[in-house]
Length: 138
Image 1 (cartoon, rainbow, N blue to C red):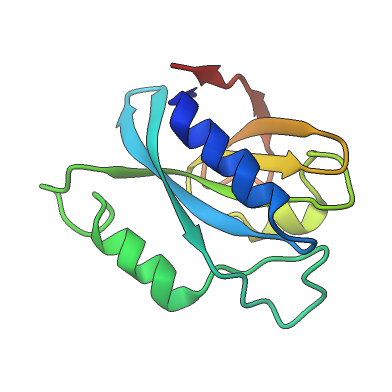
Image 2: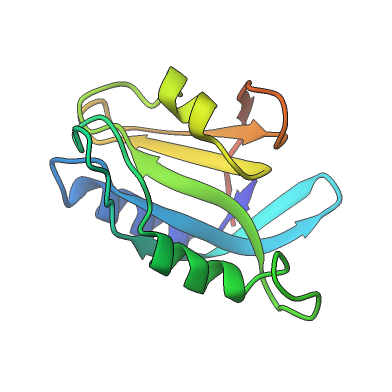
């Protein structure tokens, strides 16, 4: 996935800003098998479980994001290309909760402030498996 330096910096900054999991949407363009992210939209974690190890994006905020993308209208300028969240106290490796909760094909970026890691994974939207993906800063 190609990601702008500005967006990458925002992910790390936002991820470092909280002791609990934070999350957001990654917007940009999907072109065949390539993904490009040029916008990050932070969203509120409304999980009723332990927010130190679980996130649920605010459904109203997420719907506002989706309304701007090709998921809702074919003439949208942006695609939902991925989801971002943090693992404040663990490695940037998908948990079983991450894998089972994934809902959209795209790139899932996980940031671990504790271990200073940012890793990306591709999810095809159907199989319950994440595949490592390279992040290319542009």
